[in-house]
Image (tube, rainbow, N blue to C red; front, side, top):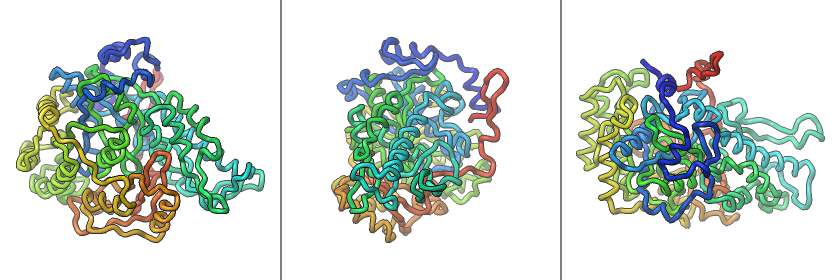
Amino acid sequence: MVTDIEIASSAKMKPIQEIAGILGIDSSELELYGNYKAKLPLSLLNEENIKNSNLILVSAITPTPAGEGKTTTSIGLVQGLNRLGKKATVVLREPSLGPVFGMKGGAAGGGYSQVLPMEDINLHFTGDFAAIEKAHNLLASLLDNHIQQRKGDIDIDPRTIHLRRVMDMNDRALRNIVIGLGGRIHGVPRETGFDITAASEVMAILCLAENFDDLKKRLGNIFLGFTYDNKPIYARDIKAQGAMAALLKDAVKPNLVQTMEGNPAIIHGGPFANIAQGTNSVIATKMAMAYSDYTVTEAGFGFDLGAEKFFDIKCKSAGLSPKAAVLVATVRALKLHGGVSLKDITQPDPGAVEKGLGNLEKHIENMEQFNLCPVVAVNRFPTDTDEELAIVKNRAQSLGVGCAVSDVWKKGGEGALELGELVIKAAERCISEFKPLYEWEWPVQDKIEAVAKKMYGAEAVDYLHHAKSDIKKIKKLGLEGLPVCIAKTQNSLSDNPKLLGRPRDFIVTVREIQIASGAGFLIPITGDIVRMPGLPRHPAAEKIDIDNKGNIEGVF
């Protein structure tokens, strides 16, 4: 079977200036990164044109560990829409090196629905992740230097510091560490650790900032801890925001590339949805909307994670309102939710598909709770049978939801023509506007419980002692009016990854609530979720190589 990288390598890419021309952007406006990548200056953003674009969100049912193909579907859908005569652009997140070298692999789509140059996008791309990592770790360094030097009248209590360092790699050994050992000149010893860069608050800030001034303001608002006399300390208090923003000078600009079929693709930012907000940047989304009739974007993991945060945080913050939402389902995921073991989900089993439909139904209910017009895309895999596909399509249609089998991995845009027609129909005929799940001014517990009960289907929420203390601290800091970005396993609608299908009568446990005041949200941590993933027994890195001509192999 031909691989993604082999398909990508066989594609004939267009010069990036030609792709910009499709959008109506003059080549002189581009900041080139070689022949096939370019940065789009913020000066190109035309807010007036945004209202004329149809924003389409792509999300998914609760996925298998390998994912269900939201990115592939998003790219294929844009290729299909362009074939149908629409001016469409796909807007995606940038891949993190953690999954690329870990379990999931790359995030540039697959088969004949990829964004190019695939190897560059999956590896260092234009250096955005590195810049975010450096800006975050500069703040950590300045903070520890303040503690060491006891500069000015800011006497920071190291025991109250929540900021950890970040790196873009799965490395469980760095989750919990002690720094400052070796004597007085090497710093003040304290416990800390590393998160993955996708979980950095700087990443979240970059993806929610509207411009450079907003970026600097948000960076300055990062909460760091307290002084010994219990006064809150923010990044602005140690004069960090200017230098951090300078490091992000280029990273804040969206990246223009192309799909396999030569359609525009904008890729920018990369927060995970299980531990962060899980959507690309506001700037990238608006940039695409300013130059496209249809803008297709995706939100990470299942609808209960990335999509919920897309609506309740990103859309409300940026004033965006999607015209329709696409829910990606797969036969293999439904079999997993129907009781089949992970190793057997490629074996035909119509009965298991039927049993797993509860997960699909719950996600459709969730879409309707936001007052959206849903469309279901069944992402076809080679092992799917016609009988299994029919079961999914018939159930969606029985619920009054348009459904199409999407075969975009194999056929590219041609495999999304039926899906594209359903999306166009939904965008043109659906007059309802999304409504948030909660209002930001609600008490913290009410916002958490609204998401847990309405979106996950929980019976109740339990708050451990640490979380209760965090709520008191949030009230004291005057931050209760921030939205919640719940960190939860992607493997279940609940906070227990073992509860598959459509779990009921479960309790969500909130262990702590972290403050991301720069990004502008609170992060309730549920279950056993961690913000630094580990590598599997056989990581994807074992198969990645480079030949003597400089050709990358094994990226998928």
